[in-house]
Image (cartoon, rainbow, N blue to C red; front, side, top):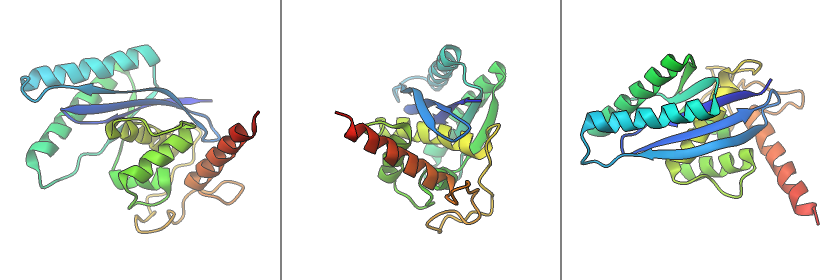
Length: 207
């Protein structure tokens, strides 16, 4: 059964939102992508309200079954991490109120799931998101592409009917060691890349 996941790249100024449908064979399709923006001079409580209402509206319209969220971790910029944590809390509150399950993923986990390499750059992640979703280019801005990556990662790693990538995967590998392989012997990231390449090739061959 197809799993619909909403991915949230939390932030106060820009909160990325991506909704994708992922089939049991891991083929992903874009349903919705966008960004909730709030101005820095707005009162904090009003910024959080706007973010919450934006997320809630998307959930109400597209009815995802799961929310995939970037895990907040310590940064040198305290104000940035605080804003990210506050936006994350709002997203989890909305998800809980709507009855959605929530999965948390670090940036390294998302990069591993999407590209097969935990040290991938943002451009590489965006390019792979575009290929997996069959898009001509990555969603913009980067927050939107990251949200889509989170949604895909959430489905591939923990959705019903999907085999998760083991926690033993290491960020320094070209592809995660021990990652669940399909009958072809490829990792999920490799399978997605091959599938996207075949689709792109088929489109180019059409008259």
